[in-house]
Length: 223
Ligand SMILES: O=C(CO)COP(=O)(O)O
Picture 1 (cartoon, protein in one colour):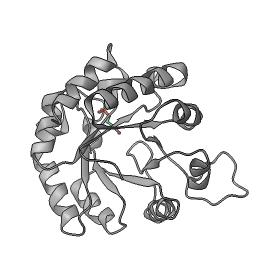
Picture 2 (cartoon, helix red, strand yellow; picture 1 turned 30 degrees about the horizontal axis):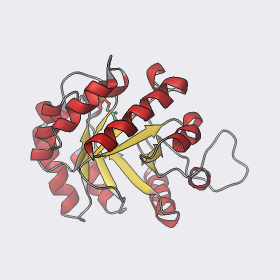
Picture 3 (spheres, rainbow, N blue to C red; picture 1 turned 90 degrees about the vertical axis):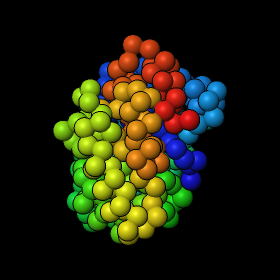
Picture 4 (tube, rainbow, N blue to C red; picture 1 turned 135 degrees about the horizontal axis):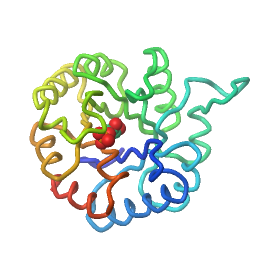
């Protein structure tokens, strides 16, 4: 398991987060993680995952996997395959890739069986509390309406962070991450002060003019 606080960078399908650019960005994450001694995790698309995994030391996770075993499934990817390519874990149920509860359960259990880290996303505190019963390694709460914007979850919805932590911890002691609109160290610090054990960031790093500078600013809020 990763040392907290953690910073997960979700590359999504941004043009600046795929192909050569993804590799370049992953190398920056790797460098900053080493320099600053903090856990940075790259959540990358399936095409780029294998190559990136072979080029960096930081954990590399998939943004999604399907709840299927090996077999007759067209256009799908499963957890076993991610394991075979040495990936470290999975984002599960991101609000841009929501799943039904039985699939979320399948993916968490499969990750456990294969020693991979599961980060399950929730769109609000109630869902986060419910997902705690499935015992993922991390729960990440991201209000969908704030994703990709310039107002962070820590600024717009501090109460949602507190409620999420309460809801999750009343079920099980699972670390809670938060994300959406996080752009700088101040946003991160506030989230951590409210009890979050890390953050998820996408556009603030992937679309930044200078991703290294953006990362160093974000990490300032974790220290
Ligand atoms: O969805 C997110 C991370 O998974 C957050 O996205 P933004 O950082 O762009 O708001």
